[in-house]
Amino acid sequence: MKRFSAKALLSLVLAFMLVLSLGVPALAAGTAAVSRQKLTVDGKAVECEKYAIGGYNYFKLRDLAMLLNGTNSQFAVDFDGDTRTVFITTGEAYTPVGGELNTGKDNSATCTASEWKVEVNGESADISAYALGGYNFFKLRDLGKAIGFYVHYDEATDTAVVDQSEEDEAWDTGDASLDNPRNQDGIGEKEILVVSFGTSFNDSRRLTIGAIEAAMEKAFPAYSVRRGFTANIIIDHVKLRDDVDIDDLKQALDRAVANGVKELVVAPTHLMDGFEYNDILDELKSYESKFEKLIVSDPLLTSHDDYDAVIKAITEDTAQFLDGETAICFMGHGTEAASNHVYADLQAKLTAAGYKDYFVGTVEATPTFQEVVDQVKAAGYKKVILEPLMIVAGDHANNDMADPEDEESWYSLFKAAGIEPTARLKGLGEFPAIQALLVSHVKAAIDAAGTLPSRDIADASDMTTVKDVEEEGMTPVTADKIKDGTYDISAKSSSSMFRVQNPKLTVADGKMTVTFTTTKTYTWFFMGPTDKIAGAADSEFLRGTETDEGMSYTISIEALDEGIACAAYSKNKDQWYARTLLFRADSLPAEALVK
Image (cartoon, rainbow, N blue to C red; front, side, top):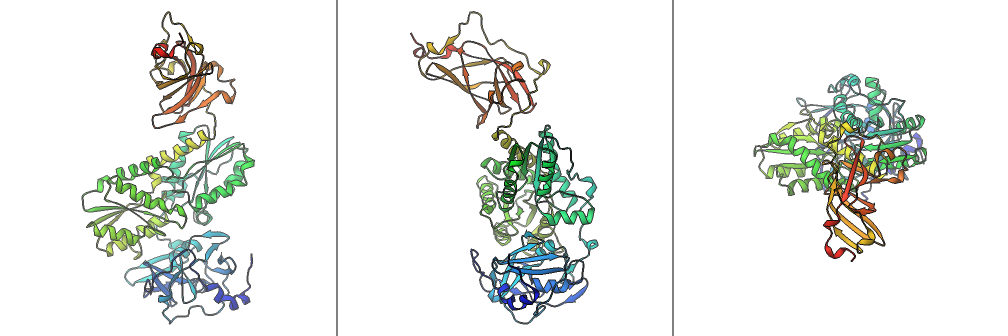
């Protein structure tokens, strides 16, 4: 990686500020405007070049570095001209290169989107940036979150207030001691690692990520459930403020290796298959050989059924607010990844399902706030309920969505548009239906990986009345008595709890198989009595195939009109249940029998 000295920076500063718009269309002239908002840093009024773009304030990185130099939030700036990457190192003094804090010329007409990337302490940072007059300008709130200073808004004086003091955090995030960081050792051989971006908001972390982890623990008693965050800046912030240790992904994986975990299930809580989710997959590649099984579940919005489940959850929870005058707006984060389409897809599905009062927008991508407010105004709504379309109700929800003192928040912007807002700080992770959906993704991933369930056998007292399926005088009918072909037949089960639906018999080459469907409760099947399960080979267990109707199985049988001892595994009870099945020969058409 090419790095530059402070001396070299002076001669290369113009190259650093050069911005292209590769893959991002240039913004039209007039989109940016010189910001008239005042700025104070640690209580001192300061002047520097700043612009209002899309309702947010943007500043030169080097100006802020100069202003914060010597404070607890000071940071050094470096860059790589080849990769167009800006490097920020917190805690280090800034070396001026000249030109900092210059003001005067209005460069708003030159505004274009920047392609420069930003890394903070070696970690990629999501910071919105534009180029004006040959310089990069960065979103003030994004810089505050990435570097570690706080940005507030004083409405009375129209002043953006930058404060690097920890005590001046503008909200009480709750008691960190109530949350379980799940960084324990003694994990055992089977672990579910719940991986989240993370949040420093203690109450929301407990009510969302913590609730998801608790749901996993309840659903999978044979597994230890642990936590990993991907955002190191959040981990560092929580450690500094609350003295709570949370593992990052690498630490969590190394802990699993050190504890002798053989089967690791990684359960991301991410909304979509975006950059963050794929970064997790990339990290896991170097650990594949360290576990006997390494399984990863899907993000929240993956299948059509996932969208339906999320829509059901959010519409049922907000139905109380629908009065013909109120719109319900969900704010997502947004991403430059192709997976950003999930927001438009969710909006389309809401509309198609008749939920005309619901709107979806994003902070960083499309649909934009402007698109959302235009739709809400055009529809004539007088009020709006704001909720985060994010797992947690963290920084974005509290700042970008709900802060009434921030003129750039959705709350303030809706109010300025003449629509009365109400903010609900409820992350998706609080919804039991969302917790259940993520649990179902883990179950599907485990099933797809062929992980066998326990071999515990249900006691006779746990079973319903056992019915006799054979009738006196029955004679077994073998394959040589039936012509080759596929036939609809009838079946009997010794238990009313195990229904055999739509059985089809296939006869070919002197062998018979039956395909049937049963309820989704029974996810595994065993041909043989339950006393054979303990010593059976893994290959003897049949994993069901999930369909719209239930779980589908295909089994080999020796004869019709003969009781077949078997066992079915209930995922709800985590036990095997003894069953006897019988497929009826008298249900065959007369022409199927060999004469």
